[in-house]
Structure formats: structure tokens, C-alpha cells
Length: 377
Image 1: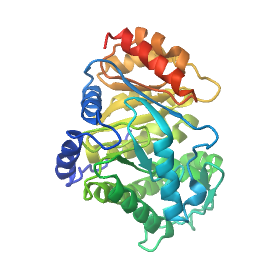
Image 2: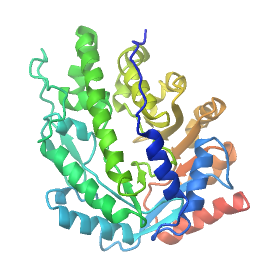
Image 3: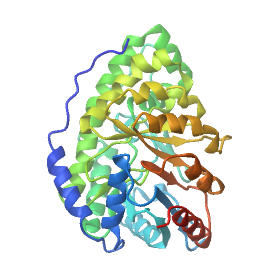
């Protein structure tokens, strides 16, 4: 049984949407064909087709200067911004990839805002699990105004938004859904046991985390939109309306009953906040939950990552067809060699392909040309 949670849309949605639509109607300094790209994305959201499927890819034009997430510079805002700006200019964008600077803290930023110790590697971050078995030391699930990561998030968002307006787009950090926040702060084995031994504690935490998530999400949009800057999230999808990318990578470790009773309500709650969502389905273990996700009306699209060790997208064509048959848009992270075959196997309406395999600019251009010829555009 899925517990019922009150759902309330964000009151600023119409104002945000009006600004985003105005931004979508004008070229950007670093993307003159942005109005056409925005129309193509809107067709994708509507399971429609402007001329061809959405295609998102980019390549580093200077391999002697690697492009990273620049997490090591977060405590140096000026140096961070300069490096991120140079990264944007150094990318060769193909198809519907849009110029942007991402305010990136690595995965599941909310954990750090709740008091978890954020640690940074060369190109990622993590929070160490600290919640005891009795949950007596669990955080309040509140974002305190003086939290270092909260104040730094707003500072960096403001800096990028002011510079981005009319020039490029702002890309948000990964806040993380309740399931993945708890996974990081409690630990995978312990959280699995908690769902058996003390599920009420988990449910209470999930519901409390939503309130903090909503505050952070609202702040991200307000910060960008008030400066007249367009906003995207980590998959690089434009939308003329606010949207979110709910996720629960922890769902690969649990069965349908646990997912649907404990974590799906949070996903439904987040999605209903903005009425437009693309769910991040991460790998084969997560795919078992696809039917439950397709029953959520505000999830208008599914993004699928084949997962480590299973790089083939073509192996999942049957699931992709089921997603399309249920009237949802589809974004597939696809190996370059499978792009044309995937296009042959699926309807072009509501189809998007993202290439995250490193390729030379000329190779990406050639692949995109093949796709365009496939659709005579």
C-alpha cells in the first residue's frame, strides 16, 4: 500500500514559466539557434516531433586541458567560475546540447546540507554514513541558514546566473532524492535492514527530507529566473516550464513492495511539485520498477542509463517501446555505435539520445550527420 502524501504545486510555477518562455524565444550569445532547440525540446516533452529526435552530445576540443567537474575549486569561487567558463567555451556542442555552467557539488548535495561530512575526490564527492542504528543522532532534516554548503550554493548560483542571462544557461547541482540521501547518511546495508525492522523511521525521514528538498529546489529556480537566466538540470534538457529529475538509485537494491510503499510517495510528491518530471532510471536493477513509475501521472519522461557492465542500449528496446506505448517521452544514454539502430527500433516522437562516450569532435559531427540524414533534416 502506497501511503498518501498531500501534494502541492509550487505557487511560482506560472511566473517561472513565463520567464523561461521569454528566454526560449531569443537566441543566446553562445547559441544562436537556441529558439529552434527549445522548440525541439518542447516537442519532445509532448511526445511529438519537430523534425528529428533530440540529440545531445559534446566533445572536448583541447585534450591537453581536461574538462572536469572542478570540485577542488569550490572553496575558491572566482577560480571556480573562471575554470567553468573556460570549460564551456572549450566544448564542441553537437545537436541540441546547450551551453551552460553547472553549479556542481557532486551527487546528493542535500546530505551535506543536513550535516553530513562532504568529502571530495578528483571528480566526485560523497558523504560518510553516520546515523546510528537507533537513529538517535539523525539530523533534523532542516537546512540551516548558516550551513556552509547552503550559503556557498546560493553564492555560486547567483554568480553564474548574473553572468548567464542572455548568454548561456545555468545548470543546477544534484540535490538528490530522499532515498539516496538516506543511503549516503545511513549506509546501504543498514538502510535495507531499517526498512524491515523500523520502516516508520525511514518513512518519517523521507517525508521530512521533501520539505528541505522543496526549499532548495525553489531557491535554485528563484536565483536563476530573477536574473533572467534560463535553467536546466544535469541531463541537459531544456523546458519552457520548470521540471525536475527525481531519482532513487537505491531502488536497485530493494524490491517493488519496499520501493512503492516507502520511496515512490516521495517521487510522486516531488513530481507533483512542478507537474513535469523526467525520472532517472539507473541500470538493470532499477528497471524492475518501471511499471510503478509509469503510473505516476506527473512523470512525463523516463531517462535510462544501461549501467556499468551493460553498456548496450539495444538490449532494452522492449522496455523503451513499453515506455513509448504508455505515452511517455524517452531519453536514452546510448553508445555511439547503437544510435542509428536505436532510431530504427523506436518511434522518433518523444525520443532523445544522449552520448556520454568521449569522442573526437569530427566523430560526433559525423554521427550527428548520419542521424539527420536518417530523418531527412
